[in-house]
Image (tube, rainbow, N blue to C red; front, side):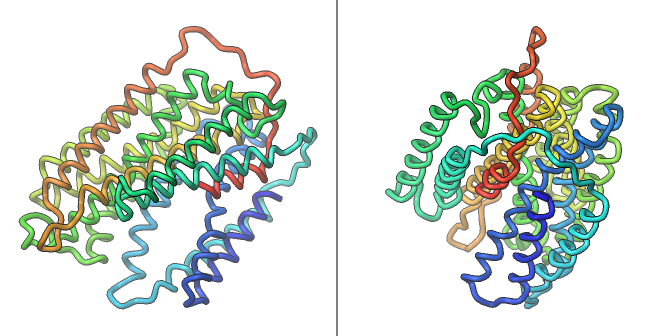
Length: 405
């Protein structure tokens, strides 16, 4: 029922965005669409409840990797739907149709299982976590526009940090917190979440950097002067196809080599791709090949990191652990978007310096290398017991947390 409730809100938000021309109502619709962030942890929890162990890893990797695949294809489809002068309503109509199809499929296919154990929902903890995250992410996303040293940025960042510190202190004391601080501070989970933060940054370094680069006019001394459609079809489509193909093999690789090795291998591929973008971007094919490599890295990491997290927690902790993992990914993306905006600030001529793009892609390579290092040093030297008592599934509060992100 939580899954269907989230899908219903997404459908309503998409329909509202398709029908309205009011900015206020459009923002309301986008907030409702934000419930899509709650789908992933709930979906992973359903997989763990319903599938046998021999099918779980591959299925979980496929669902996780689809986050990257969907994002890549979303950029491509938007290029087709949004030629010059086209109305933004087209995108919302597409998401409305997709929401109708997915909601109907979920109602018919996903089984309804009553929870055998019920726990009190930590609503205060959910609200505090959501408020703290919102404030910190507001400072990150608006820092370039407000000024990184402006009172508004400092106030938002300080307030968010204070709320998160209070949330952490309270969560360590209550009997049934929204998120176990013990779970978050375990070495493998802590470092895997840190790696997820870096992978989330890499996704935005890749598609924001590539899109702006290829659409820059030749007169800038770089770029290809691509239109939105050309950028989608020629430069982003190969990467989207690479992400889709990687999804097909990612689960098998995790089963054979382990999630940690897959993240490390994917990270090395990402380092090569980002360094190609930084140093070799004069020809179209060079950018296309680099995009294929960076998207393969994102897809592999998105599939393997949640599997790595889930392998460290009990079944009842799955939704909480994957929800927090998704939060780290989204916060990383927000941080990267802010950095890209700062590095690609237009000069006097209205165009960013080529050195700004080089810096973006070098940062992408650094985050990919960092993800390799974090997952490799995150191995526990001895087996750790499962957490006790287990954290029970609290889907409504998880949805609130994901919506904040």
